[in-house]
Length: 381
Image (cartoon, rainbow, N blue to C red):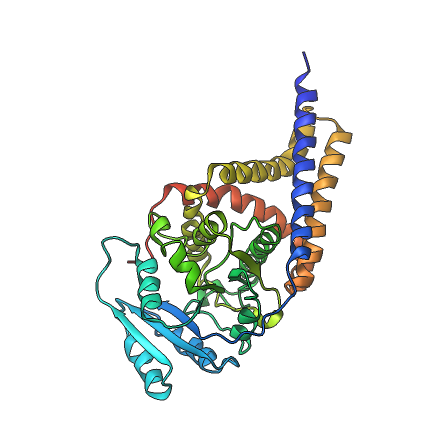
């Protein structure tokens, strides 16, 4: 029989090889993203679901009314707000004729709150292309222009990057810790964008963000809207993308032009960030079984590689095995970071890259499982 140390060594090397292959595959996927552009100028509907967003909505609407793409309408869904969100929208309506306010007064019996708000906005819209962002985002003026250019014939859905701005978390969380936590929050979003773009490049997309998303009305109607994903509080982005990929012939594209980036305001505290991410992770319970198995193996491999020095101290593996495994992880992490940081303008993470990676592994190992077993609501619905 094989000794435990031999089995452990082989397992560790397999994990390292799998990890390295995945990262090289993501790099290749980003390289494979289409660079062709469309010259069509369809009517675009920008849809924003807002609940108690009086502090954020004004700056967003200022960004939206100054888009360089002229053929667009703006639909803001006021979802049961108890602050001055409705009045703020009305003020913009008085100044800009292409802004429309939709009011929701009650929860839906058949659809989670945010999906219900988005559905109401879509039903009230007229555009051939439906674009989505959140109330706390600040898209650049060419944002819609860049998204529309990606809708070449056959492309049904376009996803994009939404980086977190660098800003203080709160008055009580200033100083070094706040700065580091804020940088990690931004790094985690950058990591997610690398996965999203890389997987879409291989026609295997599973991840995107609703802060920077667009799809054709035909696509929405073909998959019967959010009906197939209404069992999840979240997932109006990830789960919708997966339905489109599995059930339609439409292509999915990821736009990487820097003018397409949609900066967003970071959570006001690390606790809010954790709650937000647990809510996002909660959609993972509705992923397909092969997809869940894949990510379980990936994150388990990453965690095993992190704790491999402990296995050496316990004489479970040998030093050469440890060296080969760690080298594979470092090479995989570095190559993906190196290439992705050029694509997503993320050189600011260079000095803290290795520390971020260690925390990223622990974060995924702890926050991810919590998201599978906790119940959540959108904006305290």
